[in-house]
Structures are given as C-alpha cells and as structure tokens.
Image 1 (cartoon, rainbow, N blue to C red):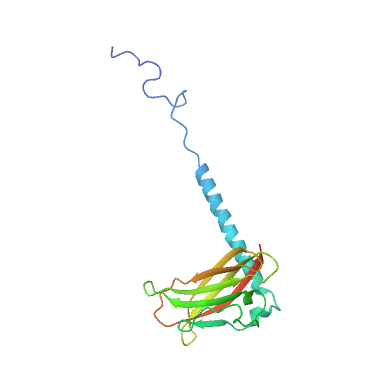
Image 2 (image 1 turned 45 degrees about the vertical axis):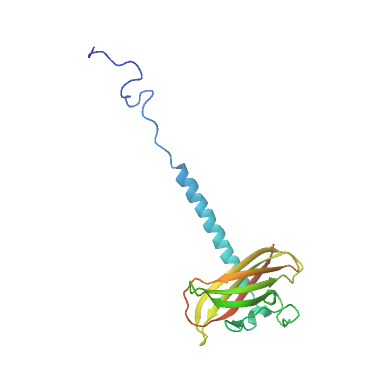
Length: 180
C-alpha cells in the first residue's frame, strides 16, 4: 500500500500542471489606492491654485483695506444695524463676533458671522490671524462655508492649532468668495 500513488487531486500539485498553486495576487488594489490619492492631491492643488490666482488680482479694494481686528477682551457680537458698511465686496460680508483662547487646550479661535450680500449663492474661504499685543503673528486659521444663499447668514469658527498663553487679537486677513 505504501507504493501506491495517491488518488487524483491529492498530494502536492506539480508546477505547471492543472490545479497548480493559485496565481499571485495582482497589484490592482495598490494601483486603485494610489490613483485615488493622486486625484485627491490634484484637487487640493487646484483649490490652492484658484485661491492664489484670486489673491493676485489687482484693483480689488477689499484686499487693500486694513485688517479687521477684534481683541479677546473687547469681542462682542454686533447687530446688522450697528455694523459699519464701509467695506464692500467679500471682506464686508465677514465679521468677527468673538476672539478667544480656550482655557483647556490653549488654542485660539475666532467666531465669524458671514452674510452673503451678493446676488448669487456663494462659497467663502476666510483666513484669520491671531496676534499678540506687539502685533506679532502667533497663529492663523481658516473657516469655510459653501452654498450660502443671497442674504443668508452662517456662523463659523476659525480654529487655530498652536498653543497660545498671551492675550490675542483676531484679524481677518483674507476673504475669498466664489459663486457656487
């Protein structure tokens, strides 16, 4: 009995024979994963390029106006009738309503009120900087809102991620508005 061959399908398959070892897994998963990653990187680069092109346009009055400071100790919300209307364009659509440093995390934040004063639904990207009493930049943050209808308001938080122990002032440094 020991000299008998095993029945077909038993034992080790011979290389190249039918029923041999299963084929190696392909790299399809890696290819798909890297393709998705590449697409995401491309989208991010396009967004950055659009933001930089928007900054480079000349003759934009709101880009030449001074920053809008609000200090941590004097921040308060203002109603629409109390707000000065001297700023036009996207910059005039954004107001800082609060500026503070979280006592637990020491992260700075700015509460923003965005009011779409344009005639079309719009997307907003707002850049805020946090400075100390000597006007030294300590941190910065961004806030975004999409699809804001004409006349509609949105409350946002621009959250910094640097730990700060000093009293701060929040300033709007840039506002980009795009039709959605």
